[in-house]
Length: 181
Image (cartoon, rainbow, N blue to C red; front, side, top):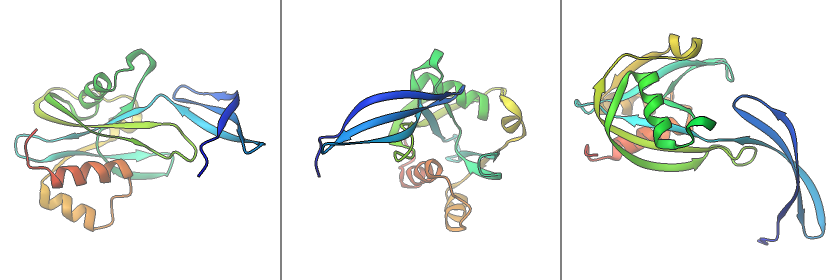
């Protein structure tokens, strides 16, 4: 494989509050071609584990797929809060109503590198202290917070109800973990 690809031009096509679409002209092997890319500031997701060794999940409606999905708490990194850990701490309180004393990075993964540069920063959160949830938006307000043990998580994974890659990574980490931060 040749590494002589070069982005030679960028044109902004659309800007939204979460991402923008950029047309990139790429040069390779004497040719030029274009690709439309969703440029995203990144996101975070948290595997939060309580003192009973249960993992916190959310059942939430997603308009993109018109379904209620199982998810681990997650959120978008905002321009005013560009630090992934600070974003994770804020989102955990908003979505789950807990603060965590112990944080550990698990992974950084590209969500779908064929069309977006979005990176998902996945953390483990333990030492939880319950506070009041502060959901934002109708989906979060209607979301159901659920705490599941290891056997229930295995059943969820085996039952075919998990169709979110970040959730799969998080739950596999939880099941393979030793119960320690």
